[in-house]
Length: 140
View 1 (cartoon, helix red, strand yellow):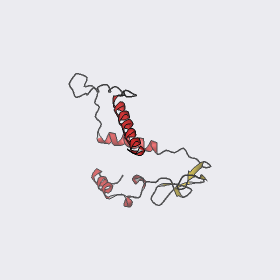
View 2 (tube, rainbow, N blue to C red):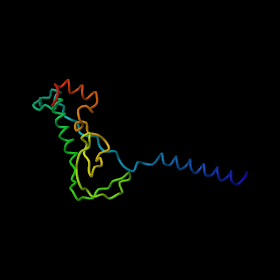
View 3 (cartoon, rainbow, N blue to C red):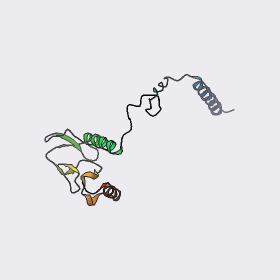
View 4 (cartoon, rainbow, N blue to C red):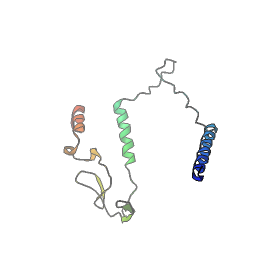
């Protein structure tokens, strides 16, 4: 038998032994314990004094407040920001503004890679948003 064939056979045997040994090893970490059970107010055990359900309007109000908070940026005139495709070009902030669609800009360049629909003019809104606005009761 040629030497290269013997080498391949031994290599295959070592690999099979390693795989068999890995199957017998214990995991290095233990899975986390399951979370404690949540007390459901509708289960009838007597503690029905708290209502955990939110109405759609309340949930939307809370969500909008969170979104408003998350869009607040701590940028002032004179700060250095990184711009360009790879965000490696240093630029000094000179002015803030909005573009023709109502989206925020810094030094005339768009700030976001996405659009915030509520800041856009109503005629640029999506068809679905316009229909939902009509169903809610008209313009705000």
